[in-house]
Image 1 (tube, helix red, strand yellow):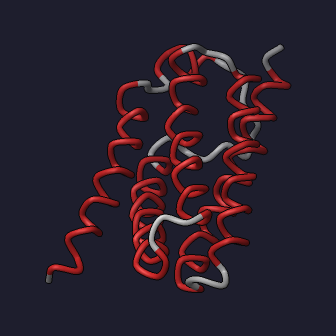
Image 2 (cartoon, rainbow, N blue to C red):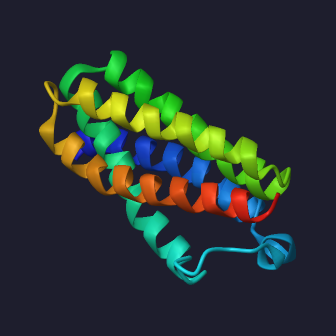
Length: 150
């Protein structure tokens, strides 16, 4: 049971970061923007992110269990910061282009984590694969919204 206490800390870190999505919500500004036809329905985002955030926390915990605070976990933490910043940049500041740059940096941090975590915990890497695909899709969506709203 004691070994699961740190998992609670990882969940708390990730869900604290996720709270920026609750603070900086899309609102009327985003609703009024032009979006591509392949934009998912609004209800899908919180559902997908809840699952992904749980997987992100477990992945960080697995790497921490395997090697402690080493480069993979540092990159994991940097990725959390980029993830946390996106809602503030996109919805708080309403800077679509800057949000896209943040998403590119987030995507790079995900790739770096996958590469660094592979020798440490393949489970962590497998937990990050859906995150990689979702952020890739989110990046394409962010870019499309940016281009459609000059």
